[in-house]
Image (tube, rainbow, N blue to C red; front, side, top):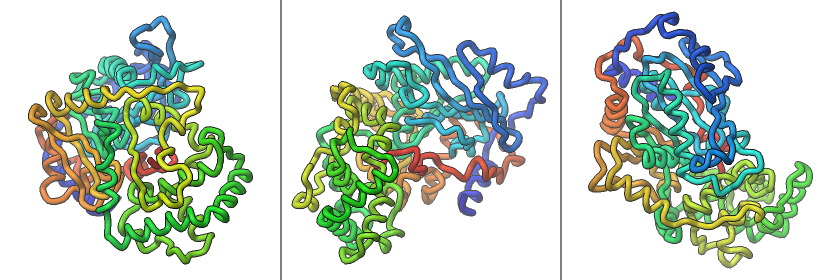
Length: 465
């Protein structure tokens, strides 16, 4: 965590966190016992974390189909960072697998609160036996969150706010759409909003303007060069796959796998990197070794293998059935491509899983945000491709804000905002959480083990495009 962010966090906490009395442990009862008493909840383990926190890995029994409970149940994994039942609760929606590594999201840090982080349904191990993939939709997932919130509110009765980044931010908005009163506010980071799935010109405009002309030209050129060297680079990828037990059944062969990886490299560069790394982009005269290593850095050798795709099958399924997926033109690659426009969700999901797109779903949610949404805070990064199609506030949106962090990538957050925007965003979050009075004793609070890791920037937990 940077010194600037520590100073900002200290100032924010000093400026107005509520002075909640610290109840004695005996007064609130043993939290472990209270958790075990919640019907359907199982405490899997407790991990050691810095005081005054306690950290639990848990599961909650959910219906496979909330419309038809007779179809059975599955165990949804989630984690709990407990601090004090008198403090606010932050509902962190991962959108993907939940990490069992203890961490505090930015809203949790700013509120010095509790945190629940929830795994999305159908991500392993939160998946039914013999899954019916038609039950993976935004309403079913939102209802998972609603039932979990309802159960935990029996213990955590203070204010609740929700948060998430990327697909997790999308998930937090979907939850609010279906259950607007479950939480008192939502902070959605870098959340794309693909309202019209077959209209992705905004992404093409993004790549035509991001960074500097010199950097864009270098990125375009190295991708073209990589496809020109297909005859030498693709066999290297196949050798890597054989040595590491990787296969290419889902994408129908390593030739497609190689091309799809090259296609995504520039997206990955801006999602996880940025202008400061432009000087490291290999020239077209660079060695095969250098270009091959660069492709792994930003496209990822494993990104199109069966083994690399499998953890993200639920994401690609949702993208191809409801969420939408960015399809960019890549005109500069056309002369070298063999499979243009084929790197889409349908080709990243096993054919045994049927998929049919529902274009009205995102339209309904977008209309809710613009006409009926309230207490929503959106934060985007200027250089993040996922922000090319953002959620926008509308004439009916109440008590809501949207900011863009200059120069930031997919890790954009409140601390990266400039001017008075960070203070304005923090004030809204504190107000939604019920904080009014100062609590100077919390100023400067920082737990490196919990605060210096960001799951949305952990590439093992997130796909590149």
